[in-house]
Length: 362
Image 1 (cartoon, rainbow, N blue to C red):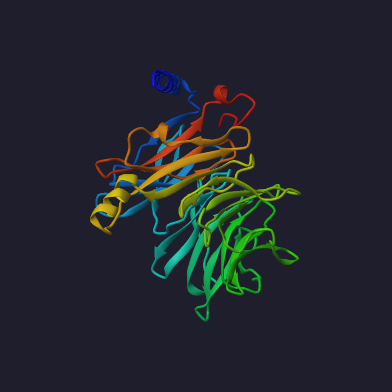
Image 2 (cartoon, one colour):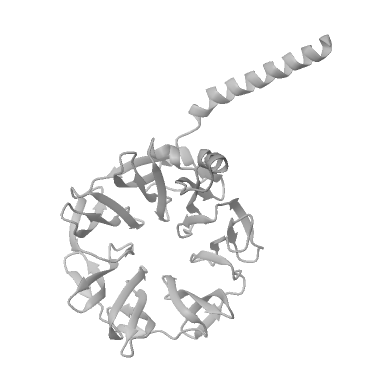
């Protein structure tokens, strides 16, 4: 009996020492990011959509009268009001050119914005609707437009040729997900009951066979690496990365509801998983089914450092979710405070904390 008691006491002391050491060491883990809450235009909320490699951030703010305004932020000029906007997707390239959508008397129309010239409306393929979804560093814009028969079609726009229809793969419900600087367009389409990914090249569409049919939020960078979330039909959803000549790699487990950024040129990707709050799961078991509130957890995956938690950098907020990631490792996201306000946030890597293992300074 005495021997068992001594072993119990020894185990208790060891566990206590471990807890104390963890408590003492955790606060001293290196700070990798510097957070900035972006100023709004005085409206009710602000939401960011995209960030380029110059640290310019584009987003939407809602004013007190309910109108939505397009804004551009950078450290030199602060927040600039660029006029009305209605679409839910904005993109910006490294020249500071913006692609988006607004409503005019003809309906929803895609536009191109550039400094000194303002907006250029892209037009349509003969219908009354066009949506801009992505822009590359050559200022080529890809999106969806209705044609004269009111059928949705893929389009590519640039300054030289204007808007033109793209050849679609043999799939239904095609939707562009991105365009690289070579003009190649990543497209999702339904084929044989499954969503597949295609790369539209000048010589024609190519099926990306290595992307599993149940993958979503697929992103392709310039060296051919791809990231995606694999959720449908999986008891354990996960974030995956493919590299040329290498098998698929599972980066991390995720929830069934995950928002992922594009994969950058450093093979970094950021994501936010949404899941029911733990205490509400117990409450549901005790009191029966009810509408459960979600909590969010955000991370960045870095090839050298692995999974990096991000929530610590935005303070004690109700929710923070990532939206964009540039090639220097700067992250943009939106946060909700406990009093119900929504703000835009920028996380910039601290160069001296990364050394040679990660992003350079913006």
